[in-house]
Each structure stands twice: as structure tokens, then as C-alpha cells.
Image 1 (tube, helix red, strand yellow):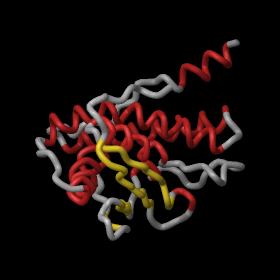
Image 2 (image 1 turned 120 degrees about the vertical axis):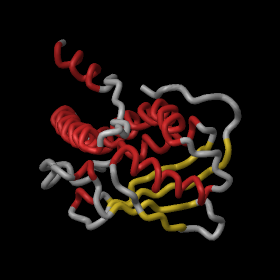
Image 3 (image 1 turned 135 degrees about the vertical axis):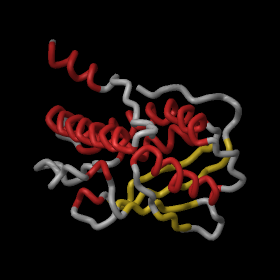
Length: 196
């Protein structure tokens, strides 16, 4: 019985990425604390679930729930204006949002002639700073899948439908982390609800 409570409780944690503070050292400490806490969360999920698909889904869902809340903080703190194109949206995500919350700036490459697909390439992924290798038996784990959920949730909250996928997971011994953003169009006025 207590195991069931623990399982359900861990997935309802209200996570928030650290906001940029006026003190650079406070921001660094907040980001580092978030990264360490995230590593512990992934470790707990790996102990509770043997199926990597389930873990990946849970990480993405948690990220989505963070994203629908985090966008309000981002819009209030960044003072960015409404983006006029998908390219501009991808640039703001990379140059403002990632810098603000994780202290890194991924490069943006377009991967479609229509201008609706982009890759965010992180040379250094802060979520992977403290991991040496993925837990044994979890070769399909998408360690940074939380970021995909955050982006999907935030974009949906500003009425942009997007498919967000982790293409390269730097934690698997790959040099870069690549997140693919595929914009699917604008959504109607209905605001998204949290996912469970």
C-alpha cells in the first residue's frame, strides 16, 4: 500500500525550473540544485519502472505540466513580444528561454523547407552535468525528455501545437543533445489542462 502511495505521489510534484535571479551565483545554485534533484527523480523512476517507454512518458508528462505553468513566468520576466514566425519562436526559445532557465544557449537549425521544423542543439546539457552513465537496463531511457514536455506545454499554452522529440540524448554517450521542434499550427482559444 505504501508503495502505491509513493508511486502516485512522486508524479504529482509541482516542479518549477529556477528563475533567473538578480544574483548570478543564486541562479547558478538554483540551476545546480534543480539538476541534482532531477537526477534523483530519474533515478527513482528507474527503480520503480522497468519499462523505459513508461519512464520516458512520465518525464514528458511532468515536463508538459511544468511548461504550461512556466510560460507565464517566462512571458512576465523576459518581456518578449509576440513572435511573428516559427523561426522567431525557435530563436526565442533557444536564446532567451534556455539561457534564462538553464544557463545555456542551444544553436537552432532549420530542418524543413517549409520553415516549421527546427532542431535545438545543446553542446552542453545541464541536466546531464552530474550523470556518468544511464542506469543499467535502461538503454532506451530519454534522460532529458522532461525538456520536450516543457517545450510542448509552454507552446500549447501560447496556442501553438508542436511535436517535440528528443533526437539525440547526450546522456547516451552522444556529443550533443538534439531536440526537434515540429510546429503543427495554431490552436483555438481553448487553453490546455494539466496532464496526469
